[in-house]
Length: 112
Image (cartoon, rainbow, N blue to C red; front, top):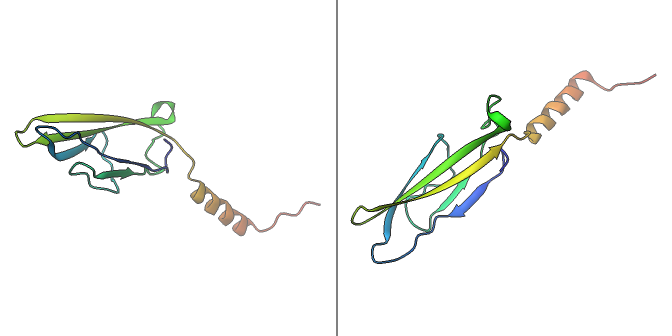
């Protein structure tokens, strides 16, 4: 996915003799999500900010690993792991605003 895009999915659990009662969420990089996943059928939504991928990251992308650890009533755990590759993207709204400001400051250009 590109910076500025949004990823959204529902965390689903299988039912059985010992169903998942709670879910803990972890990631390899601290992120701010638009949702709080605590149980089955909760929605996960996240948008990487435009500065998520740094200049020092190889190939202009960064790997984000999400871990959803489910626990049942007898404290058995099951983990779902999701890998998301976030690619560096141009912050188009900011660049357009910067361009319009530069045009406004410099004024019109006349060719003779």
